[in-house]
Image 1 (cartoon, rainbow, N blue to C red):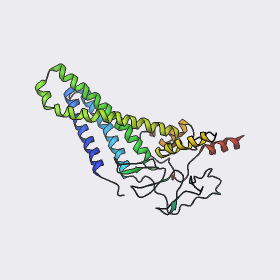
Image 2 (cartoon, helix red, strand yellow):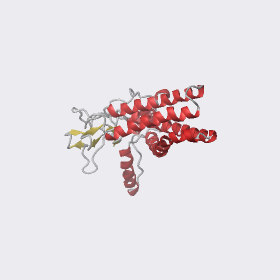
Image 3 (cartoon, rainbow, N blue to C red):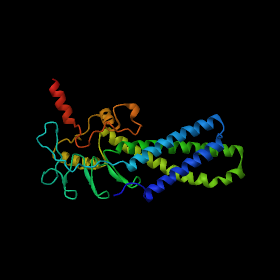
Image 4 (cartoon, rainbow, N blue to C red):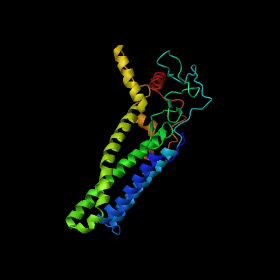
Length: 282
């Protein structure tokens, strides 16, 4: 599948442009004034948030989510690889019949992209791309900035409306009524939906899971409880270590589109590696 612009991406870009224009040139201008210090400060702050939102959105669209090398071959005798994922039926190493290659841990085949994606989370129509190993962080950071921008814009919208009602600028307000209505109809559901999406991915990051692994884990947990066992997600290294694994070792880089820390996506640290390391140190 060709990455880039699609109808859904065009809708998102149009919404971003419309909300930015209304926020800066309607809400801020009518409430604080663009020539005042508070107006300039809010316009600059919102522009910065909008710029980071667009930048991460572009990276999420155009970045390759993670391609499985054609030469990849799992080595079951490699002592550095503590686990190998196998098929539920038969117990064989995971092999993609469509791509004719072995699947690395956490990789899955995307029917839309028509290839296997490293550490695949899901296919997102709003970026016209898969969310996988290489672009998961920029996708997450985009959602963070999108939530901030929507809530920020909503606050400015309410402030602008309140200011208009106090100043009783009825004739002037009528000319901007459509901008207020459309912005409100966009911002309220967007703020709610994106906040829920952000909360969901924060939960996944703290567990070091993908969306696919969450659903697989529900089934695995049920099967384990049925057999009298306890299931533990093998890639859960603890909340803080999970955060640094996904977002980077430096807290200051967590909200920047930098992903030099993620590795090649063919091997991942597991809880068994931590157990082996602690046992060796004793």
